[in-house]
Length: 432
Figure (cartoon, rainbow, N blue to C red):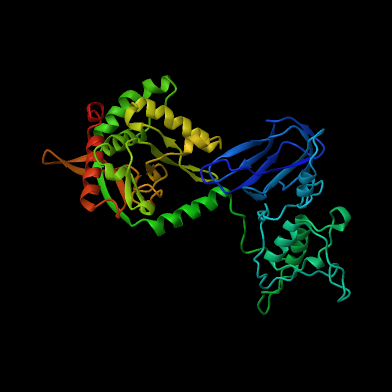
């Protein structure tokens, strides 16, 4: 019989993924548990294993296409098994052609090319070679993804010459059609000047990645559901600098890179034990606030693909050295796209270190449904007053955003004061 394997729900509320790489091809024999495809989700890149042994008879989607949870990935022919119902179910979907240029019902368009504006304002998409010769021209045969792409771009797909099997129009055909239309841009020259042979595009388009779509969704969700309030402050951290310098070389010999961020993580985690409102979550469905008695600190990591927030769990129970080692590990995994679901879940509070790039103050957006996020700015040297004398000091700016529905201004200030106290006197973290 033919078994249709749909994109499974791999947890954490994911509802779609983008195909990164196929490991199998049509006609290939596979074993149960063998990786079929590498999928990029908004949180991780992961392999999807086959649930059955058999022969691949159809593959749905190609690299760069987005597939919803529950939509078909492959069809597997299982030898020696009878099941007419399974065969009939398999026939309900449209298999891709051998080049993989096709999708099924619920697949979205997510190509890997730069698209022109959908309005095609000022751009001719006809060429002499592709102009219709009759009003009764034949309707084009195409894959669903190509038809959807043409519709989004305002292209009459019937004008496109198909190069796929049986003359089928593919996305590549549409891209070539549009490319030829670029040379037909109207002249924008003034009197006394000559028109250029070709006008380059003034804008560039890239499809949204899974990470970028999720960032956009989460930011809007946070702004719509939380009452943001931000408090700014700064502290003098000469003692922190001295202690880090004292232990930095020794830990480096052990393979541990010691930055200032582990001290901030430890200070926040310990302070949360004294201020439960900052380690909470609003549960409007049940008219209650959930106070969490574990302290898992999410760290916003800037990667080429976008911002991800892996979690250092039970940070209050870890030493500065252990936090530094864990921070090095998750940062490297984030940048190499090797984070797992376990690395990403169960955060209770978030820290974003924009100062590592250069900013001093910002208004961080809460990582909803968490209550608070601490922004760490760039250290700067300033004149400070110590013992009634003006001296050179090093200032660390902090920005704390909270959900004002749960946390009042007084509690915010007390929490931030405690965090700053730990950072001004890092030894206090050992005896807190």
